[in-house]
Amino acid sequence: MLLFLSLTGIILSVILLVFNAGRYISSRYLGGFFLLISLNALTFHVFIDSFSVPILAIFFVHPDSLMYLAGPLLFLYIRSVLTDKSHFRRSDLWHLLPAFIYLFSVIPYLFLSWDEKTANAALLASDIGNLKYIRASLLYSVIHPGLVFISRPLLVTGYAIGSSVIFIRWLKNRKNRNVLSQQQYMIPWLTVLLGFVFILTISHLMAMTEAYLSHNLKVFFTLRLLHLFSGIGLTGLLISPLFFPSILYGMPRIPAASPAATPPGPNPEEGSDSWSPVPEDPPKPGFEADYLKQIGSKMDECMQQLQPYLQNDCNLAYMAKLTGIPAHHLAYYFREERRQPFNEYRNLWRVQHAKKLIREGKTKELTLEAIGLLSGFSTRNTFYTAFRKIEGSPPSALIDKESEKKK
Image (cartoon, rainbow, N blue to C red; front, side, top):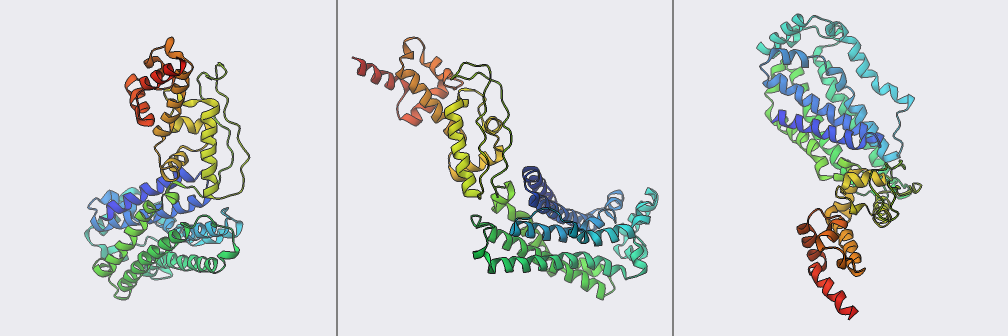
């Protein structure tokens, strides 16, 4: 179960980073936070269930310094979405201090030979209690090793408290702030995020403290009730983005204008050999609702001016290149705002084009199948099916109707 949760968290982290990191700095913080929490869960799985000494040797000590970055990343994410200031400041460097201190303390261990590391891993595999005999950090000479392990969940808990404080302050003064004014889903999202972080870190911290006070590391693995709460916190934390698609796929602000690519293909209006992309309007200040309206306007304008629906390969990826709007934003628009599959939207334009050809008397020169192909449909059957679905009657009925008008 722990392995499944950790791998799920890693996948979610990748989604956040792939879809949003290049455009929204706050998503880098959130994706990094989920990645480190998932990596920590995977490390515990290796310590509890792994019987492979080489794998244990890889996960022992090597990723530990990264764990001290989880709390700062959470804090930076909360601060960035509440203040609309995402950039990492020079004053934020002190957040990295715990990670650097621990990294410096384990440098001697990192440079040990692979044989020495596997020997230590074999000791741990035989008895986790042997951890106290392995001097993996220079800090062990100054403070008890148990306190070093407790410092990680303690640090995350401290940052979660700090994040909650600025969130509560923001809630008290939100009437006077414009940030998130049209993103009300962010309030329950941040509440859920911080809630599950507290459940996970506090239960984990209590288990670590109990093991330290009893001077027996094995106690940590026997506290089933605390591990149950920890599992609830981890599960809720990792699956929570699935219930907030705007967080997972990212639609917080109108993106900066980007040059639209020019896909190959003839322009049916002008008979030229290339397309002319829709002119980019300068971005206007606004939030998600305004952005979605702009997507709808730009899509209609693109369809009307450039007629990309006449191309067989007209899909979301094609439209993304033509309009400069990310494909996942287009998918979000059709799914959540328009509540209509893109294929239906595209076929509507194709049917309207076919009706125009029929009304112009093209049936005297072309077959219905040819009219369907000229309208962007790949086969006669898809043309007939789409026409009947949209108009409620086959193309032949429109031909008969136009013939009656001319008599």
